[in-house]
Image (tube, rainbow, N blue to C red; front, side, top):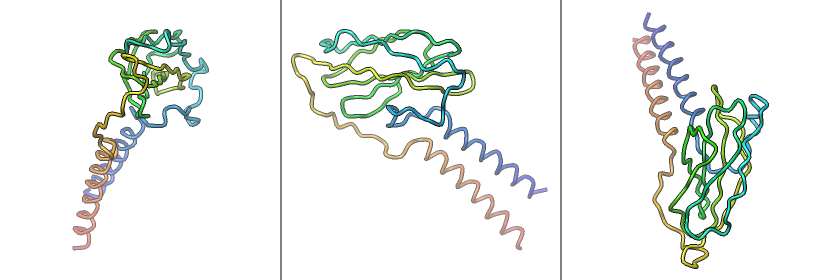
Length: 175
């Protein structure tokens, strides 16, 4: 009976770890289209329209795109002048999005289609240079970041719990 419970616990834990690692990832290589995703519905990626004006002088950018049939929402990403990729919104259901507070430097923006079942294709990348008070490139801001993604930490804890359970089961079985 206990053996079945441990096997069930292992399967459930495996599924949880799989979900954690497959949903909601933001990677630093979002500029590269993921070939594993491919076209889910055949409707194609969203296409960001050119950002106007460029260069930008107020730090406010309006992203615009045409809605794609079959897409239920869009994930909006920015890449700052230091190359750090950040997801701004996960489930945005419109076709324009306003971003403010940008500092001087070159900013990149990209969308990702979201379907009912999964993430989809990446859009094109639109780039805008922001020049605030005549300063072209602001000094890099040194922001501390966690070098280990949260998904890795949670997954490690779950895998550790599974291994401890297996060790306890083996010890009880041998005694």
